[in-house]
Image 1 (cartoon, rainbow, N blue to C red):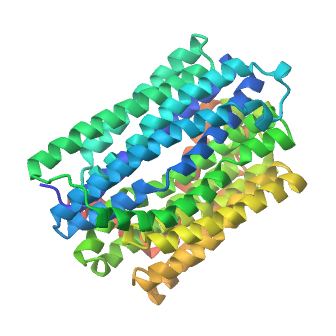
Image 2 (tube, rainbow, N blue to C red):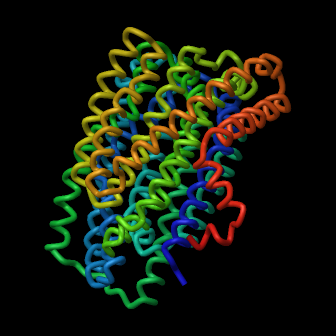
Image 3 (cartoon, one colour):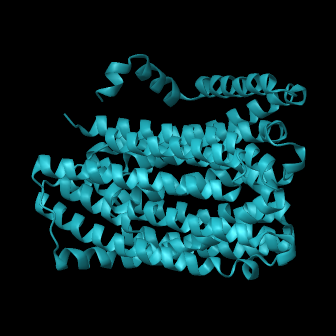
Length: 505
């Protein structure tokens, strides 16, 4: 039997598993890519991948809208509305995917001009062919968005998570094999196609099975479709600006500095991106359940659980910041070599930005799930516009540290506005805000103590064994200090001591 608690738990589990697989794969594939692909070609591939991602602005954020609307309809027991949302959403999403492949293919023609690197210094023929294959991968991945969104909306967690993991693991294995056998960027592109096909076909078969089992008719309703379009108009605007902002950094680095600097930034930022994903995954995992609660009118009664989720995220995020400050240089040096480390100032700025970026992602996920799609989309667009401005100014005058700071500066806007939306829906109150601020300050104290202690042993970390021991020490010291000063952590530890009781809550 599907219950909200089980669905939320499995969603979080699969989100964390997929993040873990992606993280491990990134740790493995980046050194392999650097070893088997010339650094200048790999740097150009990274930048061209960002350019191709701009084509996804044609995807107006349908999956976000469809998931929220489907979960709310399912929570309210309106299966006919769910069928209409599915019919209109899948039709629109298929059209979007078709347009996407043409737009992306058109952009590939202008790679030499966009990258600004002379044709005699890069094998553009090889690069463009790989990019065109990536366009096909984009098509399959985007075509799967709506189907996956409906699956999540009807509280499917195990099946969707399993299918995604199969596609993810298979694509990474395929990528490693092809790159090591001389396929270069084409190997990465073919792996993208493989993942898209697995997710599209797998989720499509499962959704058909569920709809037949529950006798949900897939219908076309112009009124429902118009409502989806009205919501999509907001997500489209925000997604357009956000996509440019999130994929502009590598291109700016290539143009303002060098392709090699883009690789160094990617290597240095990889751990930060992993940590940011780690913090945002739980909120993304519970989003379908939050929408289900909102549809059933039971959101305020679950405020305590949502505040606990925010608290967990703060703990994880500031632990990650602590570890990055202490160990990121050592990790990158052991991983890909000191030559691909972007420097201590860049790492420090990335660490300072991580907390704000992660909190913005957490809050915006929750507000979107609640149903504040329009407001969240507007503030996301504002955040992206601020980030774009900061990217150019920061890169122009401060180099890599300036680019590293841009996203954090823009995210401040989202944190403030989405916090107001959560206040409006009574998820945040004066008491919960004071509680969260106090917990954040306790974590900062634990961060300071742990960082001071880490100075004693970080300089001796010259091997992977030493790194693992140092990382373990950071975790132990951070949580030991926090346990002594945080009543919330002590309370949660007692709940986790009885896992069965915790899962029933």
